Image (tube, rainbow over all chains, first blue to last red; front, side):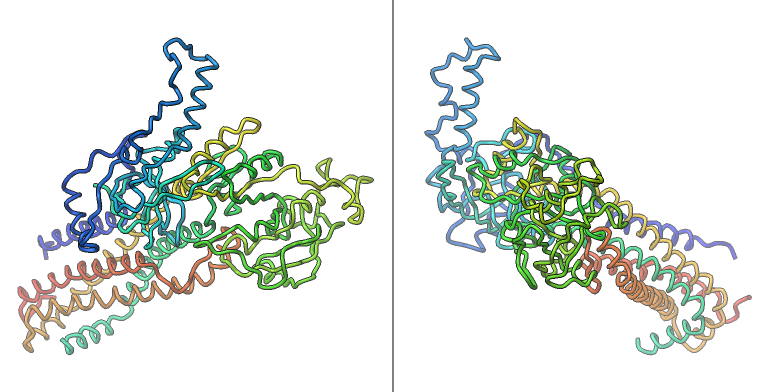
Amino acid sequence: MTPPSSLKRSYRLIAALIGGLLTINLQTVTAADYEVGDRLASPPSKSAGKATPQASSANPAKPYKEVTWDNLMPKNWDPMAPLKGLKLDHLKDGDPRAIEALEKIRAAWNDAPIEPTLNGARIRIPGFVIPLERVGDKVSEFLLVPYFGACIHTPPPPSNQIIHVTVSKPISGMRTMDAMWVNGVMHAGKIDTEMGQAGYQLKAEMVAPYK
Amino acid sequence: MRPLLFLAFASAWNRRTTLGLMAISIGLSVMLLLGVEQLRTQARESFSQSISGTDLVVGARTSPIQLMLYAVFRLGDATHNIRWSSYQTISQHPSVSWSVPISLGDSHRGFAVIGTTTDYFEYFRYADRRLLAFSSGKPFVDIFDAVVGADVAQQLGYQLGDSIILNHGAGGMGLSDHADKPFRVSGILKRTGLSVDRSVHISLEAIEAIHLDWQGGAPMPGLSIPAEYVRKFDLAPKEITAIFIGLKSRAGVFQMQRYINQYKTEPLLAVLPGVALDELWSVVSIVEKSLLAISALVVGVGLSGLVAVVLAGLGERRRELAVLRSVGAGPGVVFMLLAIEGLMVVVAGSLIGLSGLMVLSMFATPILETHLGISLATWTLSAESWKLLLIVMATGFLVSLIPGYRAYRISLADGLTPRL
């Protein structure tokens, strides 16, 4: 009895199946393709179109308004205000006045004002997540920041560039610095009198991977 | 279909030794695969349950993962301590809502001793913001009061009011203990399933007190201070190992982290527990994945063994198949018979693997709990494990189509008189 071609075929089949079994388990490490400082590009219309019907099906009356991180800074806020009156080009690097100005600007950014019109707005914004609270392996609370690597490798962004997001239904499989779309209702956070700090808080109704 | 099932079973029963062994080998491989998966998911869950509601964990400057391991999971040793003055400055920072200092390094018969303040019982939260609860007694009040975790109380049989002796360092040998200063159990905590269960909690002052006469690194003759005089000393803590911090505004966490990391008088490190955990997982995930890959390969070996056994069995079953053909079974029936046989072995193997895993985890759970602080839920399979099991069964069924196809071809070609 010569080994028929069916046997050879069957070995190929076994190899393919084992290969399949392996690839199912070995989902490659999803190292994000972002570098520190990368921002998410202005939203691709495809995914926007995909998500809007979902949002409108949940709440047909009020669709989410897409906002950018720049919208979170009030228009009349000038981050460079503390530098006014300083002739920067006349200062040397180690000049105490320059250092003082830098510290002043940091302090100003720490209690950056928020845009009042966004209080209560239904918005949709993309950003990178930093998980804060987990239920089992699922994330129930996270911070959303505008650029990759924000806050871990660099000085923190101004307080109006951080959104504290709470999710009613915890999300599984969320990792630090994953890019996500967040839809929900924005609230101006409680004002911390001592720090003069006000922040954005968002009750997320939908969180989806950014594509 | 029914008679076909019966026929397949009866035929398989005839060759039960070979097929039984095959089922056992598949069972073992399934056990390995599911075991790895269960351990992976439950370790993750157990770790992420360990801390909740804490914004920053602060310690001496080291790697964030290391800090999390020793401060939260009580694995490994601290690299350095923090000055008490640094703690006071940080805890009074305007954006700090609460802060709990802890001091590690001593042990009681293999259980970690944690020096802390009563704030620990008030603010430290685990698993979805649950607070620690007392099953009996209350937090420590006196210097020589101790609050023990559920496992400590159970394994050492402690009750309220019992007196216990703490060891220095890892201890446990009866050497270098703090025998002259016994503690009294003032409270027993409810079970949490976390490292807290295996900890003895005493006040920071008590940590100072038991180390008063240890200035030379060991108790020196003539330098012992009896317990009744201890209270006369200045027992204000001088050093602590780590701080848990809760902030007034969680969005301000980066500013606070920056403030602590750039603290001028002492090199300190503040980590966000969630971020550090993710870092830990990304380190561990390579090991996890290779373990999973190896166990998937073992399952592959088991399944190809199954194909080999059923294929080899075909030779001796030519007569059987010929008889079946002669009484009117079509080639399709022969094909189905073989496929059903393969599926039966795979299902039996999966069942063996599952029950084996249950038995094994019953034995392994206490060992894992004492050594790694991971608590395993014995009887629940994660969704991921069920998926794996289904994949194994489906793959098993698919590969058993191979001998089916072969039998189909043979029975077509051989007719009624196979040349044996």
